[in-house]
Image (cartoon, rainbow, N blue to C red; front, side, top):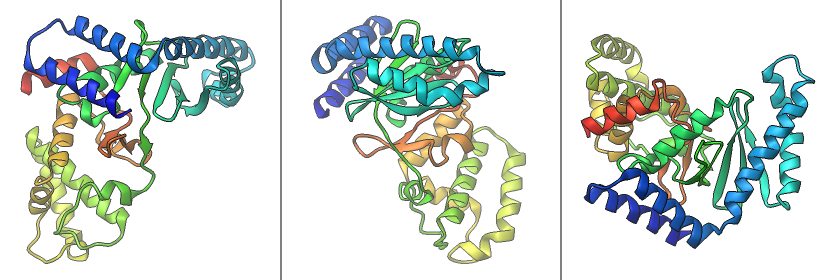
Amino acid sequence: MKLLFENWKRFLKEADDQEYDYDAEMLAQQQELEKEHFGSSIKELAQMAYDTYREQIKKYSSQVQSKRELILYHEAMASEVYHKSGKKLLDGGRGSFRATFHYDKDYVIKIDATLDVSGRQMNQEEKELGTTVTDGELFPRCFLWSPTYEWIVVENVKEIRSFEEINDFFPNNLIKVSDPVHYHMYFMDAINYRVAQLTNDTKTIERLTEEFQQTKHMFTVNSYVTIQKIQQEFRKNNLFNNICRLIVNYDLDTKDSLSRYNTGIGFDGRFVILDPSVKETLFKGIEFARKKL
């Protein structure tokens, strides 16, 4: 696994150091990783998972009143995938658009689990973010994908389930509160404040400043602390700055992107956003980001 990530980072570094055919380089990366680390089986398993799950969706779609009810049959559909894979693909759950399966302990296969193929857009977005040179470190690394994004293979990330785990990545000496929920509240306020600065959103800055004045006596180290100083303290952390930049560049939904269960810890211990919640189209966001960076 360590060698896999080293190869992945080498490809990104080479991409950053020279101009090249991006699509050709990504194809070469995909082929090398597949040959050295995955073999041909994971590609076949991913396609099988998609095909089998889709067959099951069509089977159960005649028994439901709405598309949302299909989620209720996920366990039965995932069980079919599990047995067809020779018990190699373990059910990782599903959301509104995609189902996930764990392969080995290091990889996750994500498949489009919809009738209208809307889950493919999410796969495409995640693949783009997971292979982008400048921002891939904050998203699960994507290693393999089908040409039409029916499925993708990404690194297995440990899901963050508590505020304490998120807060540990963002220390701030100006906040004295011990309650992790309140600490996270100030962290989110600082994120929103900084994003408002970057986007010249004066109304949000004024609102956050006023709200902070009403509660700061309970949660800060002294009466001289302002929300401006709180976010300046957070900005000593490069991770905080990178997240604020991503929110602006990709128009991320701040609350959803930084929530519990939607953040995680990568293989190498880094903070990861599991679902980017891109509000604009991804390609518009990436083009904007590349120009600014």
